[in-house]
Length: 199
Image 1 (cartoon, rainbow, N blue to C red):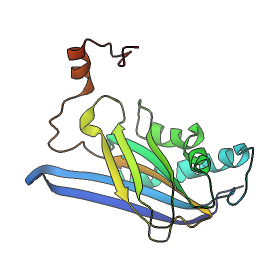
Image 2 (image 1 turned 90 degrees about the vertical axis):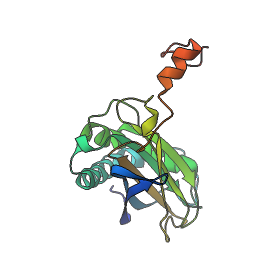
Image 3 (image 1 turned 30 degrees about the horizontal axis):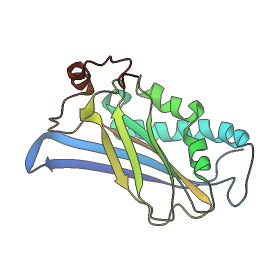
Image 4 (image 1 turned 30 degrees about the vertical axis):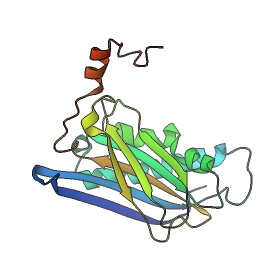
């Protein structure tokens, strides 16, 4: 059982001026989106496992390969994330099912040599719905310079019976980041890195 992929869309953005100042190097963010038929659309399915286990490795491998080609190599990707948007005949659980499985995400994580979890969104919407892919540093979840969001849309997707599955990446953080990292806040507030909420 393989995913029925209608099309693959690539998003690639290079920012040359940010905040009225030229960047030293382009600030580049990019994504690969697979538009997949939702195998559970229009009905309630109790057990999503068979499709999750079948689709995850196929999508993870295919999309990771394209992300690495966009970046040039895995080391070039500093920030990463994932997202899914399910069409109106599906549940948010369907979007979650295709991206919240190690069978999907581990392909990307291993290809870029990451330690952090993949930041994510899972939403529902019609064709041309905003696709928001949150990113964070692949090795350091507290590095705020790499808290980024890729935003784009696909005019004809998702259809009601589809899911858009997305991987995103960036080769740098924000060019002129000036808000520090969360570790400074923790130090100033007297909180422990392993217990940031002090609970």
